[in-house]
Length: 229
Image (cartoon, rainbow, N blue to C red):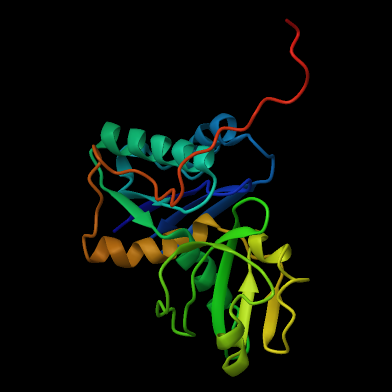
């Protein structure tokens, strides 16, 4: 494989990565909230142009499949599908929480279980438990966090919590075996790392029918402010 384009839009931080022959060639992050639809297509075009890469030279596009922001995931998948359709290349979907766990593994943290968390309103998070070798110890779930959460596991294991969902759980998950790692959020470069293996195994998505993994139904927010009518 020559070029793999990876897209991450599951949270307010959007990012794009380009891997060449399995190595990270370029990476860009955008921290402007609610701007994926505006910045993502421009960022992709500029990154490819700066390195003299044509869309036709891409071998695959990898997308963060969720869970996460409903709107963000829809935008990322729509852009990825458009590139794949136009250039007749495969789409690869990577589990968002797995990519977060991979980043922590790359940091060589102390031994323990890993629990990436993405904020899902109030005291609810999208989360999943992983072993140190990225083995999946639980399914992805939408979990309401209280003082009893993970209690049995924490009594016998060190668990590292991270992601924007973990920040709001620090005061609730009070346990000697609960560790918190700051600065971890979904990143396209780790989506790409995991996608490389899927490309080699030809684990591609159906372009016509693939949908992001929302986990929960979309709930529209009520508009703020008073009506002018």
